[in-house]
Image (cartoon, rainbow, N blue to C red; front, side, top):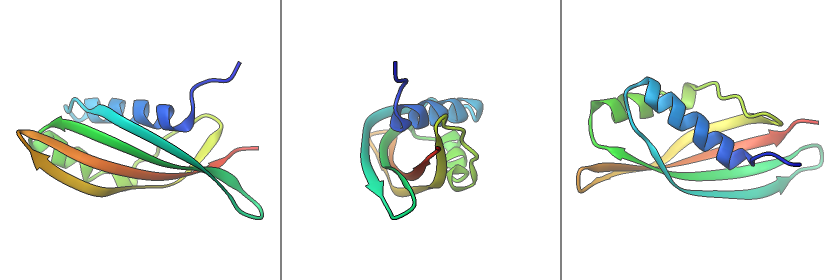
Length: 103
């Protein structure tokens, strides 16, 4: 039986990391697209996150590029915020990631 995919694992890891910073993050959408090169394969991930506006969100979001996230079966090669907006008292962000499948 196969476990959850990389996008689910990443969403869980980001939610847990945000909670440690006092920020309640919701994963609104997930998208995973397979990619392959001559030597590697993996997934391009995109997650849409939202949270109440505030200092906790901004502080946590600023740390995303430096996070060390464990994804069983995958190596996280890149993690970044590609879009951030505040609307109606909530902050919304798109997080993009690139994984490499572990052999």
